[in-house]
Length: 346
Length: 245
Ligand SMILES: Nc1ncnc2c1ncn2[C@@H]1O[C@H](COP(=O)(O)OP(=O)(O)OP(=O)(O)O)[C@@H](O)[C@H]1O
Ligand SMILES: [Mg+2]
Image (cartoon, rainbow over all chains, first blue to last red; front, side, top):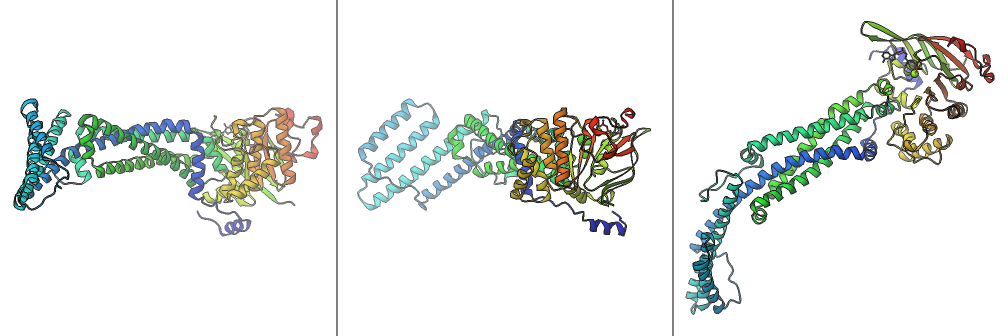
């Protein structure tokens, strides 16, 4: 601003100062106060953000959970298959022989299981497992009966192999059951036969490849709902406080301070909503997935990293949205001419 | 000659409304001296609020100059203006404009916060000011728990927060009944006498003129005439120029 030299000197002499910038802590204090009082409305706004974020989170977590269910068991099958090969080659002996087994007990177990497998069971998966368990028990009986160290060593090797087979059977059975459930849920492109390792890939690659087109679309809508929700809430908040803003300016508030106030309010609402949304979204999708696939497999193949990344990603989106959506309303509040503001009838 | 605290020189303010120009102020020359109590009288639409906005640094003249403490307001940047509004000028409004989410004390300490006082300093000073306006026992009341008169007292305490040179009160009694209004005027007069703060008020009401040192009559955006208190026959409630209104 061009000034005449004389004017500057005069003003300096008369001592017009420059308004200080207030620290964030003051803005936090005042924003917190106004939010506490306006809790009712904040709750309503927050609710819409919670819903949108919960929705987004459940889409992301849902994809993560389903993907972990279809990839992790396959990895497990391959691992156990490899283990079996190594046991058969005598390279490793991963199973510890239990103490306190008696021959009588084993014999009874063998005959009852064999009988069940031959007479009662109809499910081929269960029959297979029963036969494998019989084999384990028979091998154990051989270990107990061994007279020489050599016989005992042979029997122990058998026992290890039959244990490894049983484990493989179990894991393959579980995989087959999961495949059935996943197919029921509309997941396609699954094969009961595990022939090669599922792809190792990062979280976002996984999302890009595994997310259903419908979910992708819904996710975008959720993000937009969230954005518009915060935007609208902040505009309302500015509108109902035009006078208050004008008054604050008359009392010496700088524009930067008003902007800080609105950013803080928006971030706070956004953050609370986002945190609650993440929690609710996670719980919902977990409950839904365990309804569809069973809690057991969901728990044992739970992809902690993926769930965490979903939460972090959602948190990032929620926070970015609350900041972005506050830009225009905060700017508008700060620029409000106090003269106009004071003319507004309330 | 006493120091002039507010000086306006040929202040004009017009609003462009499409093709027509609305003249709110048509050239106001006014000098207010430090420590004075001035009332600005004029019919509705005569430009009182517009003039207040000029003096208060809330609006800039279309033409002419406004000096506060001999500083040309038009030359100030945003930071200097905020400083001016915060420390040199106290505002009182017809509608009180107490910030509804804050207690009486918080309202009074807000300008102090803007001026950089610590919370403790502000709290002590705020309590003292509220005590002075007779609300020593209402520090933590919210505005909706206070009557209009009490809210205006809070506003007076708030306007005094940073020991301003001038208090601008635009129809401070406009929303109050006669008695309460007179109490507010008395309180303003008291502030004027004890704290030596210059007071400029606008009013429509003859009965609110008794405290004034001078009365500035404005009409149609111009200063019509200025009367000294000594010229007036206030006790009788008859003031020269009533018929002119
Ligand atoms: N923003 C604006 N746009 C157009 N005209 C305006 C604006 N502000 C004020 N005016 C006009 O300026 C004139 C003076 O208005 P002002 O508010 O100063 O009057 P006043 O003396 O304060 O009246 P009152 O006693 O009713 O408060 C009026 O004719 C008004 O219509
Ligand atoms: Mg007015």
